Length: 117
Image (cartoon, rainbow, N blue to C red):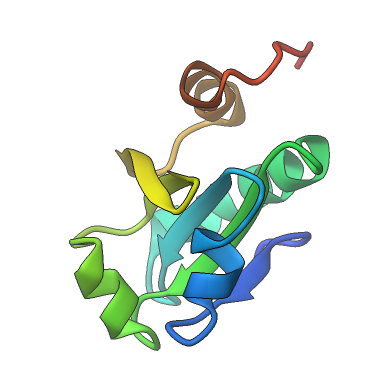
């Protein structure tokens, strides 16, 4: 899996505690080593994780190593990004996107304060 800096990895075993029970909204990237767009998205996720620390948690889940969670949320394409709030999926996005677009989508969903980018 292409690891984004400042982004934790979750697994089938840790998903419940790390994502569903989180006190913060969580952005989960469903990713894989063989996924080219996932590699493009990694630095974007790293920046978002750093900039939104304390307001949004960003994690990655390797779909090949964690089929249970991948199937549970119907993930078929990589990268898939799902935002969880209070243990529930509230937004799903498929495909890599530039930081500005990702932040705009997250701002709408999570009511994050606008920040200069």
